[in-house]
Image 1 (cartoon, one colour):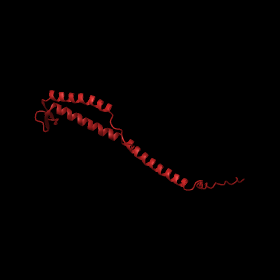
Image 2: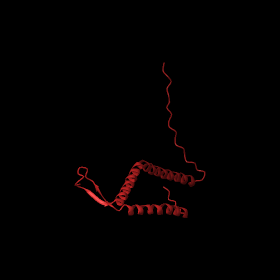
Image 3: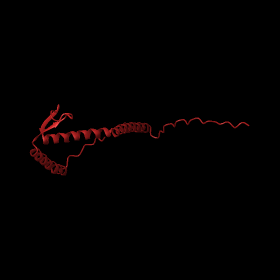
Image 4: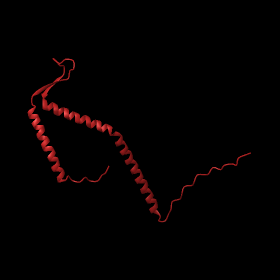
Length: 134
């Protein structure tokens, strides 16, 4: 994740947002005014005459509530689906930080004594094979 500052919103983005949001708001308001009639939503599948659980509200409110619930369900589903990518990003960020620390340590060792080459590790002992016996 980058810590670089985000650029300020450009005037083009503000104009584009206004061109989208203003007509959308007008459509929503017109829909709400045209659909003010109350509707009864029954939550009881067994009794349609005398429902045990029902809600009466304007049609536009019902539609808006259902849209909001749909957006929330979609957002949660998307968040759950991208969990593996968030885990991978966290793992890779930890690995990158560890590698940066390792590089810094190598730079400190190399910078401590100019011309100094760290000793090479001892190679593993070789396996000596015996001549075959006849």
